[in-house]
Amino acid sequence: MSETAELKLPDGQVVQLPVVEGSAGERAIDIANLRAESKYITLDPGFGNTGSCLSSITFIDGDNGVLLYRGIPIEELCAHSSFLETSFLLINGRLPKKAELESFESEITRHTMLYEDVKNFYDGFPRDAHPMAILASVVCSLSSFYQDEQGSPGEVSYLNSIRLMAKLPTIAAWAYKRSVGQPFMYPSNNLRYCENFLYMMFGLPVEEYEPDPAVVEALDTLLILHADHEQNCSTSTVRLVRSSMTNMFACIASGICALWGSRHGGANQEVIEMLEQIQEDGGNVKKFVEMAKDRDSGFRLMGFGHRVYKNFDPRAKIIKAKCDKVLERLKVADPLLDIAKELEEAALNDDYFKEKKLYPNVDFYSGIIYKAMGIPTNAFTVMFALGRLPGWIAHAKEYTEEPKNRIGRPRQIYTGPESAHWLPFDQR
Ligand code: ACO
Image (cartoon, rainbow, N blue to C red; front, side, top):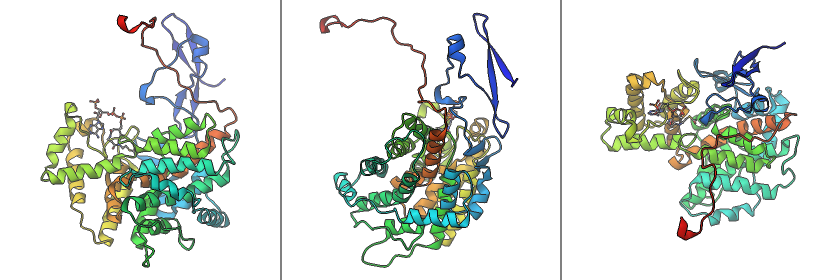
């Protein structure tokens, strides 16, 4: 018989709970039958101790700063792979053969256009609309154009995965073009994924545009680093929305919305805004560290801390190295980078940050690279979404293909009034 844990309840009842072990030795107590056997549920606000699924996509060892996609270290993928190869790996569970990768890349290249009618949607958004609002809205609207997979019970259609991968850069670039009042650039089938995105962002119909190879390389690495991170807020959202059998375009739109917030993907925008604030304030890094330690200030060091990484974020390490390289190659001398480094050092040597195990996360340096690339600050989270897309697709696919999947429906402990009655206005 497999291992079990015993749970002794206040009334003396003892419930046997199976122990589940993952391939890397992580252990969990399976409480799926707890309520049926005892009428008790578990309570875990923020889900810090709750495993919501079994997953073979990504492994994180937060204590040792390890991140693996399908078993492969992130460092190896950043050194040898491309974003599209990594996307194939995440979605299909294995590295592609050469011909498979060529076919994956070519199919994505041939689906980058949007229905011409989609262009009209952009006219309805205010010029200063946040690009994440546009991204989520337009992605969701694709479900009205592709009605062939409106929630299949057993699979995520390959074609819709290709459509999403192919069209998200176009949707994102057009959101930027709308904000600066420039003509939309149609995708070019002669360009590879990252080059094509930069071309649609920064190209103009009136002149040739050649993306800088240093920028292309850095972008590819950043997208790989963002590609998946197991059951984070946006990925859990995608899985939960998918669990009601919602179509894939709406599922991905929900992931985009969840990513937007400042505690998640939105932090990269807030990091730059915070660094600019420190700069405007005369560069007094220590003052901001002190402010972050004061709970009453309501201020946190953006780009610091992580629910899972309690030692270092391996993605931050790779990005920091890339950041120095890109800025040097682009000959950008950004004073914000100096402030960031000073801030990092001050925080890492501060007892509060040491005790609470708060280290720079992926967002701390990514914004500086995006800024050097010319990406506007409010579009940083859009870049994160472009990178996270294959992870969302992989998780939706994994969920959908699980034969015993059920709709996600957490329980609660009710704390409201037990009995109340409607009263007319004069008695309230
Ligand atoms: N600055 C100052 N104090 C912090 C910070 C920070 N950046 N992060 C956490 N703390 C403190 C909290 O006040 C709390 O203190 P307490 O124990 O006295 O109450 C303690 O550290 C634990 O923080 P929690 O919020 O409980 O940790 P949680 O795991 O829930 O949150 C999170 C993690 C959201 C990332 C948090 O560290 C944070 O808000 N960081 C800043 C935003 C950020 O960078 N987000 C990006 C995350 S990475 C990503 O999504 C790609």
